[in-house]
Length: 114
Image (cartoon, rainbow, N blue to C red; front, side):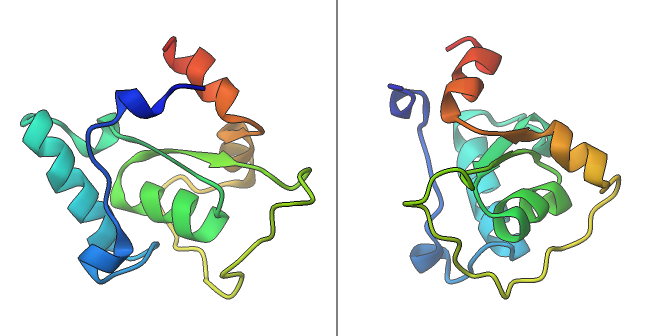
């Protein structure tokens, strides 16, 4: 997909000492992003992940936009951390989650016109 060249930062749970969906890891990522874009607002950040609880709900609770990457059709992908409880956030509905679910990162590329 050649999308890695479009990213200048990432937050690693090993460095931050917190895992998703903890607010601290999203905050660390946001602070790194603000180094590059000082006036960045949380709702201008798009987080993409394949865990409903850790990625999608965690990012939405923090105030980021989020897409849920549904890999359930891929037998090679195994769900992990299935014990994590999905955090609540404002506007959380089944319809909202379905609207923001994608099956492939190719969809992101076309959404963002990369």
